[in-house]
Length: 438
Ligand SMILES: Cc1cc2nc3c(=O)[nH]c(=O)nc-3n(C[C@H](O)[C@H](O)[C@H](O)COP(=O)(O)OP(=O)(O)OC[C@H]3O[C@@H](n4cnc5c(N)ncnc54)[C@H](O)[C@@H]3O)c2cc1C
Image 1 (cartoon, rainbow, N blue to C red):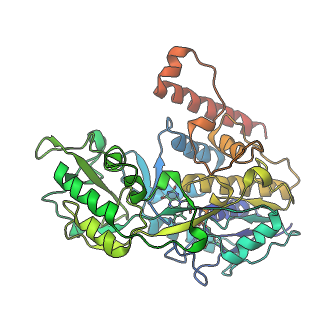
Image 2 (image 1 turned 135 degrees about the vertical axis):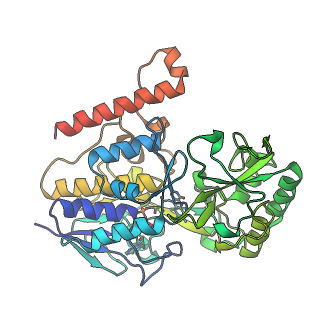
Image 3 (image 1 turned 180 degrees about the vertical axis):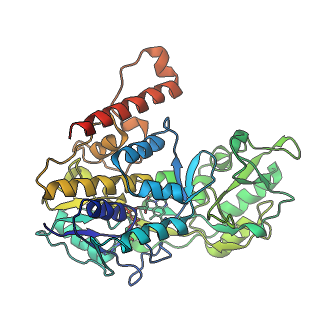
């Protein structure tokens, strides 16, 4: 049987390689780290989380939560590892990033069907079945090679990383533990602000110097769900109070007061020694970040262990070049997976890696490729990115807007929770039925 190439040992590439190996297919897995860095990854491990440590909701009435349930049904290999590495984060599914990527690295390194090649891939051999999962920070040389292969223009945009704080440096005379609406355990650390404190913070933020963008990065648009805090702030003085600094449902039990604004910190590692500041991805200069963080009540003396940074994000024009099976239109041997396809987010990247791995295995076994039903979130995503009718294509994460409409009477349509429950149930029924027939 043919040996498969997987390019990129990130979230998508790791899942894809493990899916192939599980089916007894040999894989050459190319990963350029640590010989060549991406600028955002910090380790040489496989499946590293580069920014937040949260994969979003696991609740089935949330589109991202439903995607996780679909992945479990389809046999995602990384999903159980996520649960093994889970840290408390209210309703969200968050992991200890070090533990998670170490576990995935162990799975890959100990798999006899996977041959790890620690090299930058620079060419595509169209005669070798290959899954390209080199991510949003694909190396420059390989980006050019993909461009040559596809003959289509690349689109560039950017997102940013939030600072990480050492918990022991937080002042708990001011900060307090609580989840919004007091739901579940007290996972989040909250730093409350009065109106005056918020205004002082806001002024520092909007007047802070930013890191100069490189020439090729100018005219870029941002990753909408991971906007830099300074970009959100530039939209108006109260935008943050309706976004990441929303005080609603965060009453300080010591005073009984719901504050004017609240900065939240989410646990970042299993031992709870590190916390990231929620929604604080930023492109501010490091000295400015320090001043800004220290202006937050409770973080006056915070030890910032990692500053926020901003990065290029690369994706292909999938509607022109991909099929819903994630196989390229140009050459049946070449598949794409992960963020580079325009399925945006950690969960989505793992999910598309899973589908690409399954479909590559089916391809080399001369089986029909899976085109998932559009009633499922993963089917909706893969159909969305490969839909030729897009006039201007932008990456998308899992959301209810892309899923196949459901016939409902008016009363139920207005009840969002009930509607989502019905959509989720339909998705799982359709998926189970679909899988039972193949
Ligand atoms: C800075 C940043 C922050 C992000 N933050 C979030 C977030 O908070 N939440 C969220 O849901 N999503 C976030 N994303 C989006 C996305 O979910 C992640 O980028 C995710 O890691 C994508 O998975 P992937 O497998 O496609 O790519 P990656 O996980 O980046 O994996 C690609 C791998 O390919 C390797 N590689 C690249 N070029 C080559 C080459 N030529 N040869 C060999 N190997 C190569 C890289 O080293 C890397 O290991 C962020 C993206 C970026 C860039």
